[in-house]
Image (cartoon, rainbow, N blue to C red):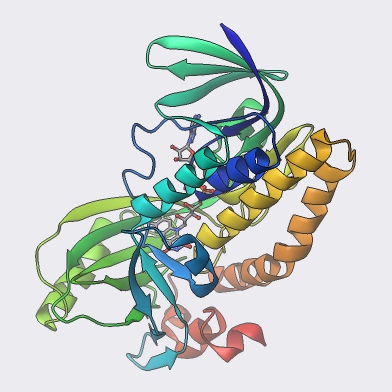
Length: 351
Ligand SMILES: Cc1cc2nc3c(=O)[nH]c(=O)nc-3n(C[C@H](O)[C@H](O)[C@H](O)COP(=O)(O)OP(=O)(O)OC[C@H]3O[C@@H](n4cnc5c(N)ncnc54)[C@H](O)[C@@H]3O)c2cc1C
């Protein structure tokens, strides 16, 4: 069976749902698919979003708590507090509320549906044991860090760092995030993000520089248990890949638009990507609508607008990442001055 749609969206993370919503509200026929059984699950996220995303946290169960600041802990143990405000969300509920918004605007949302193959503007979808074909006019690739769309189009894979995270009991509620910067986490950092009476404790690191993440995370966990900050229990374990190589060489390939992690929009230093995913998804949906509405330049405009908006901050992060790379696994990586220059909370990062 073959169906026809104006826009096929692959992936129902924040980028895909935002794209489906924007395209559907413009009156296009939209099919948005995700291979997951339940949107948003399993959660692979520390669940912090910047304040401007509060417009997406109104549905019950999405907002968990407010964050007032960030503590950055340097290798010497010195700590710097910065007014880095934001929100902790329930990421599964956040993703589902965005998908519901897309559905309410008229998009058809289909879970347990995997993009298996692309043949020109025909997509083959695997739904359980069945295979369906969909003819599309614009495709939004919002399929995350290991984009299958990119692979099928023969585009290069993005460089990623690996993460590991435990959800643990928090002994005292708090409104600040903690970040650990040191050579224990080469190419990444450790984090503790409070969410009510629990916290997400995790770390990211470059797998080329560290054999495995379990030992350093268990050590950080044990240290925080000994300090009385968190409990020894672990409610949930997760992890995942974070793109760190910046924007793809092209985020538009013919009638295919890449958005979110699939486009390489995640910040190469902080790993934050939710806000950029929502925004780029919406921009991709709008671009699809403008293009199918007759503005021939709309897809190329998407490429240049995305580069204009995110290029400078991604470029700075990439250059800091490359600069830091020369120090990992050397003594200098545990020099506070080096870490200050490499982390977004310090003025040295922006100098
Ligand atoms: C451990 C961890 C912690 C993080 N913490 C934060 C944080 O606190 N704050 C922040 O801003 N960012 C954080 N990030 C990054 C953030 O999660 C991503 O930037 C964000 O999820 C990107 O959204 P997306 O929609 O582009 O991709 P995703 O959320 O990855 O969604 C892609 C979707 O595509 C689907 N998919 C993939 N292939 C196919 C296919 N072939 N067919 C159908 N569906 C497919 C997947 O199932 C998935 O649902 C974290 C990442 C990790 C790994």
